Amino acid sequence: MTIRHLRIFIEVVDSGKMSIAASRLFISQPTVSQAIRELEEHYGGLLFERLSKKLYITAKGQRLLSYARNVVKQFDDMEEAMVQDNYVKKIRIGATHTVGDCILGDVINAFRKNNPQIETYSYVDNTTHIEDKLLKSELDIGIVEGKVKSPDLISIPEVNDFLVLICSTQHPFAEKKIVKLEDLENESFAMREQGSGTRELFERYMLEKGMSIRIALEGNSSASIKKAVIENQFLAVISIRLVEEEIKNGKIHVIQNTDSDWDRYFSIVYHKNKIVTDEMENLIEVIKDYKHVDILQGISTGKLMK
Image (tube, rainbow, N blue to C red):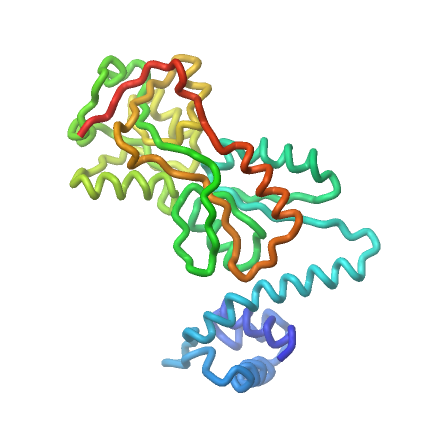
């Protein structure tokens, strides 16, 4: 078993067909088939089921894949470090949209200040896509607010956060000290896109309460959500960290949930088979400095009651 075998295996998984994998790797299809067969003989079991001319990865194949991507990436890193005289250490950071809007810029600046010799790359998307890139070893570490679903990823809660219901200061709810949960069914909501951790938490909460959500706008940025709240009198549920400026400017009114159902964390996530490097350890220490949030101290808010 060689690195070449693993590269071919990963390409077959990603492409779904041996012919496509062969084309992408500029080798013949029999060579791909032989490499997969040799891997299966080496590990004593099928890596793919072959049904109706389609390939379906087996449980053994999934187990190998969880190691293969990281092994190949670590090998490539070693080759680069040993061959290039001007090699620069790198860290690839993934963050969800909420984290990107809240703390990512400050985290990267603080990390660069303490680690000027390390090159950083950051990628912002929703929780689902960050998870996918971590599983494919396209990112080293992630900071997400959503629930990570893959058992191959380690998720460590580190930064406190909570969601709040927001409305414009011109909205009728801004005059109420108490908003009833059933009042929300008659309101239009601005919501994040599918795959967002924020949306998933709120939808799960409303489903458990037997409540429906009238969605008037979907957006993949906090800016579009806040704009819709201020200008169109929609409601939204959003991280408290994202509305600090609008609260201070008197544009947004906050309604707090009276229980802890909307409390959550930003979590540090990485692959269970990944070697935690010094760069990753240093980044984790920086992230811990953003653990607490106290934006609402001294601010008058409404209360959401059942």
